Length: 380
Image (cartoon, rainbow, N blue to C red; front, side, top):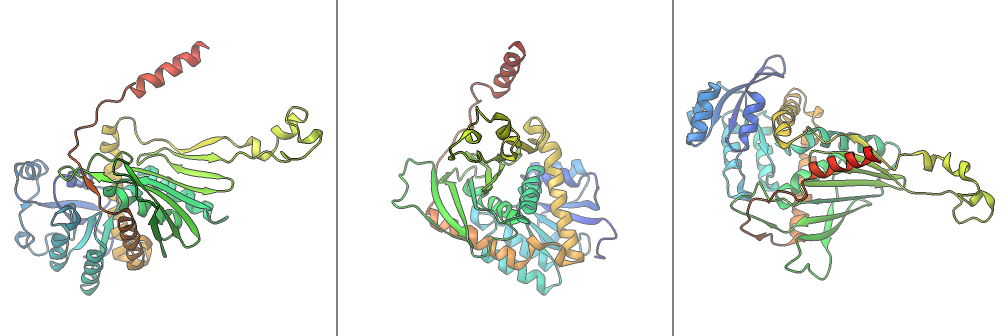
């Protein structure tokens, strides 16, 4: 493969979440072209290959030599009883660069990174959510804020299946995760508690987190009570990733100068202008930095998902040309990310298994509720 001067031919392995990769590649934009599907030959994968006009391979060995430049492995890993890492290793053996969907166990990452390096190839892990608009906004704002001063605290809430991507969001926002460690609160959380509270440190930065303590093994991609909710805070305020798709909101800290002082100037009523014109009072109490992505979930899937996947592929492409241009795919960073993931999982203890039903519709419907508030505001 010759660097970045032509479209790269991409093989997609897996057609469940892999279907979003197929959607991202079907138009051949941004320097990537869908070159085939690797799957078990189910009716779903057969129909998708026919629909997209690409060959369907049922094993890495069935793929012709030189037909593909890189592979996207979107198959569950050993963590969830899948063959994703075995496939990734086989495809590296065929001379392909590999982008593997998260989460991946740290020992597998180390093995696959070494295998790629030994063949002059690139191996990346795609945490996906850092490439969505909300994730990029959170990472960018936090990165700029850190140039003024280090944050005072971090906190996040997530589920076991999205812990990896939450840590990657946090690591990219902080510039790294070196030295992460954490522990659970004593006594252990009661069995009926839905989240396990944990406290950790990244260097001198305290980190508080809540990890959902159950999942449905028959449907591990769903049933996250909170997918991603992250916050980085400073004395002056907090940048909040409200959920996976946004919005990102800055909330300003409340501070009244001279509040404890005696005299006329310390009184808000007697010196109202002095207080109202102070910089602490002229800041918005909350500022939306990036809107919630799209309208309905279908629009997010249709527009934001393919763009996020192409961004992850572009990160791989630049890493192929110059490994230094992909700092969050370097072996040291992936090692620190993997160790942070292990530290949280060990501190949280065993994840409970539950058989879960589809979530019910919300009541009241938030769209109707928001419309009623708008109508009431107009009538007032």
